[in-house]
Length: 629
Image 1 (spheres, rainbow, N blue to C red):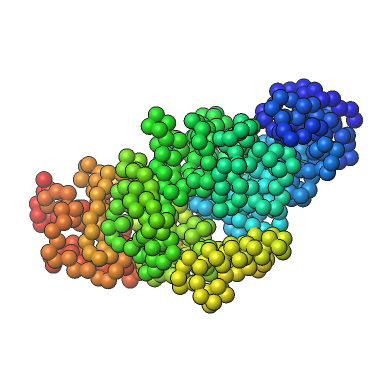
Image 2 (image 1 turned 180 degrees about the vertical axis):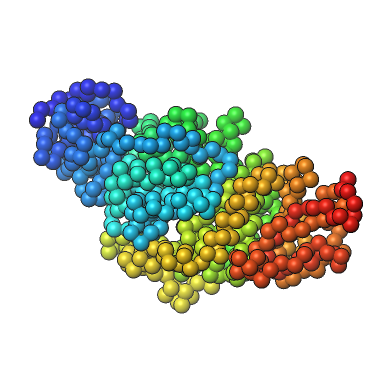
């Protein structure tokens, strides 16, 4: 086997190992080093040539797909490649050369995931099935398509140490974790999703590295900011000295997932901790790169942003970053309070009132600059101009279920009827809805925080979870603290795996979600964001969806007791034309969903609104009234 430090081909990415028929080219940023070598297992040790700006590069002839290698820095220990494409033994082991071109894709006609019309489904691959693999998850994709899901959002897969974890402590950001399969297994999952008509969006963490398996300081301490801080560790240096290669690393990573894995977009974790005072914010650059890498396919890039900065989704010409959507925690928090009656901890600024749900449907964020007691400062920016579909709405996600202390699902902390009613609101309003795995059949499997760390780190993490739960007064005592499971205990992880038999035993919940998503997809009134709403009672409200052709729809939600609305001086309740009246088109209380049936709402005795129910009404002509005008 021979080698040379010259590359026979143009590189596709700024860093990492890129294979060609003649061998593999390596490139790494190590500005604090004077000498870097590639040590190939069973092969040569190849010195890399120093390039400007701290890069080292070289070509190893004959090094093929599957070869294992490490970098030796200044003659010292050998370490994994920071841009490794696969870590078969985890972040502490060798890196592997991966040829992305060997996989035969079948999705050439896949159009991608456009901004409008999406129904998202958050998935943790390790717990979505008993097997916890890409292959097992792929087998369930047709079920999600039949449900009405248009795209799955996969929780982070960048490799991390240990046998299980959420994925937010990734350290090898180009390497899909070996825990779920090989890189080609990931590609098969995406290919199968596209064949089923389902897009794939990947959750990525661009705000910090995990605490274990991160060797970036050995290569380039300049990777980390010396100006900013986060609650999870040192953020990345996107705006300080030597920030250029750091920005390049992350922007290229975003494009890499779209290019080499045919992903349809990204979910950017905690963008409030992606600090960048540059004129061109790195989040905006990431969005542009995703679109470029898709080569004409539609893409969907969304962000989590705790301060609720609407500029995330505003177009660049309006001063924004140009992403497609932003998570709406406000709606979740209001719903949680309404369904549980508790507004402690970070729910303290929500009352779960009917007005909150009317406002969320009309305007997205509830806090757009008002004072926020939990943070003792103002929250949000004005967002009245943001189209409603750019808000991602949910009743559950990984964080919020885990933060219930015992990992209880929403359906376990409220009544079945209320949960059905709130599900109707979620799936019919103009925001982009997102379900969390198992929500579609009211799973009773918990979702807890789990992370397989070393003993010392595991103890710190367990204590950190206890401290986080102390925010909630009801859980702050000794009894509540005793309920917080050990994240490093394998049993904690195993408890979170979904139970397939439970889905089969709960067809009424699957029918509820399937029918609602079909109504959302096929009824023109729900395709429009032209709506208004009004409060009808302490826990009751109406949303009117205007179609412009007499096909208006009413969605009436009552989370409280039965309500007799007499008188009813609310113009949104008036039929769209003389000679018409409202009749029930859909009800959360239909027996097929586990309900007891629904009596007429618009009666000669004025309005009678059933308690703990959601009802969709359509207008039809009353023959006794003559022709409608």
